[in-house]
Structures are given as C-alpha cells and as structure tokens.
Length: 281
Image (cartoon, rainbow, N blue to C red; front, side, top):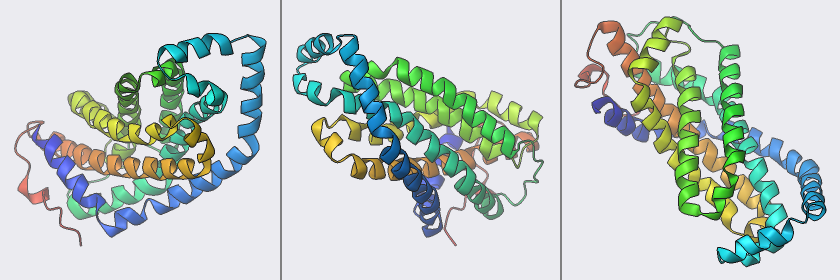
C-alpha cells in the first residue's frame, strides 16, 4: 500500500511539470489529425449502414419502446449517430494509447529513470514489437468486451463501473509492459507483474475511472451529435492526459517494485528515502 500511495503522489506532482504537459501535445495533435480524416471519410458511411440495418430488421420500434421504458424516448431520433460514435470510441482510445506509447512513454521512462532511478541498470527485456503486439491483442479483447457491454450506456452508473474495469485491465496490461520494457529482463518483468498483480490492476482501474470521464461526453444525446467535432477533440485530449498520468503512475510504481525485487527488499515496505524526491528540476 505504501508504494501504491507514494507512486500516486509522485505521479500527480510529476504530471504538473511543464515537461510532462508538453508530452501530451504530440500524441494529441497526431490523434486529432488522424480522427479528423477518419470522421470526415468514415462517419457518414457507418451511419448509413446502421440506418439500413435498423430499417431492414425493424429494430426502431423495439429499441424505441426500450428507451421509453428508461425515460429516454427522445434519444430515438439520434440513436443511429450515437451508436456510430460509441462504436468508434474504442478506436479513439486505441489511437491515443498507441501514440502515447510511441511518443510519450519512452520520454517519460528516460526522464523518470534518470531523475529518480539512476541506480537501475537497463536489461531491455521488452521491444517495440512486443509493445505493439501487447497493445493490439489487449485492445482486441477490450473491443470485444466493450461492444458486448455497449448496452450498459443506457444505465450510466453501471456503464461507469464496467468500463472502468475494462480500462483498468487494458491499461494494466499495456502500461506495465511498456514501463518495464527497457529496465527489466523478461524474467524480472514476469516476476514483478506476478508479485504486484493486484496493486497494478488497482492502478489501472482508478485510471480507468478517470478515463471513463471522456466517455460521458457521448451521453449528451442531440448535443453530442451536433457538437461531435468539438467533443471528439476534447475527448482525445482527455484520453491523452489520462494516459500520460497513468504512464507516470505505472513508471514510479514499477521501477520502485523492480528496485525492491533486485535488492531483495519486501515488495511493499517503507519507501526508500533515496528515491522519494519528486521536486521538478
């Protein structure tokens, strides 16, 4: 618990550093440019396909009755655009995650490692290919579960819990690999993840709760459709910001856990005062 709380505080302070804030700019701009093109070229075809599917299968009447039962009958008029947006949302999450992994996490790793853990030697147990593969297969599982539970958007409290857990699992699997890729050997990475599985999953779940906030932007009914370009830009920036904070939290936690593993210290004793300094330079 000490490492969990200490790493959270250190990540929070580090996030306020101007260098960390600048690291959100490049992933945001690249993601924004990519999704501007994707929405321009692909959103209307998806809406047209969903519209034809609903009409062919006479689904508007059944779904309209269901929405009326929940007191949200007005959503029927924008149901197809909303479904198209919710379907694209996991892809927005993937692009933010991939671009943060490519452009930001290596810089965070160098900064935190040199600044706070110069005593840790790098054993390069991970690779760019391994990081990409981990991101892709984890995201494939995430997308299947996301689409299988898309109906929970009709019950916002349940949607918040379920999608926080989904985010938690995704960020735990991807961020832990990326964080330890340079510093840990393959055996060390497996050992650290085994010893700290539940705290790391908790870090991911809390970050998932923060990451669920941009999702709420899509629950605005007609307004979310009208202001789609603006909401998409805000959502992408929030995703990037949450991912950067999460990367910092995982970085501090995993490197501290690796340091303790190599030195034979207990997994969760008092934090070593030699590496607790968080004052920005």
